[in-house]
Image (cartoon, rainbow, N blue to C red; front, side, top):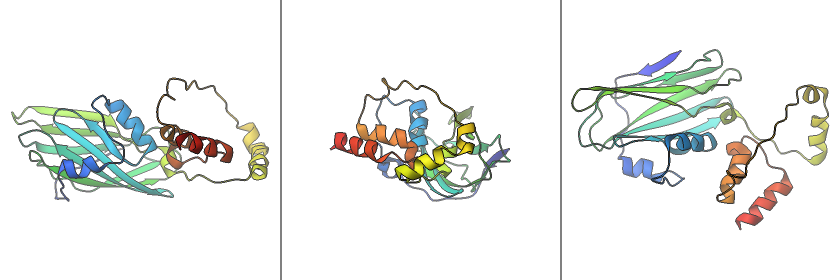
Length: 222
């Protein structure tokens, strides 16, 4: 399924004021792949940036519903015309994305916002794709396609369990018969602030850390 919008007006803010206020500082060395991974763990950061365009995402999730604001900022010195955003959802039986109308004219140094209503109907495995199409100042067409950070853990809520409750669930036949294990080597990924490690382990809040591990990480961050 492809969800798209082209036309209509929406709120506009300057890119510096809105996207510059994201919670995680962006660095010149960031890649768009790293930006996508960051937004898998957070709900407020830059998703994509090049010499011409910056895309920021701010989202809120509650249960099986989510509200997402997508900010498109023109970094160039000329307007972009015929600006169209489409959201490709391959598992349409599991994930529903409804996009608000989007202004097709993006002036230089200007930002437009598009709002998405997302609903998880059942578990899904692949995030949607965002496809952008627009005309450059010389009227030549350009298309950008990238993964959009709507993933299953966004709809999950961590649950705090006592040690007794945890092992009671763990020993149930349903969990024993469906147990899957693997080894993940994290040495290279753990070279950074401990707060980012804690966020990665908890997958943006979708999982709960064991109390002892959480206290250990908080001690290291102090």
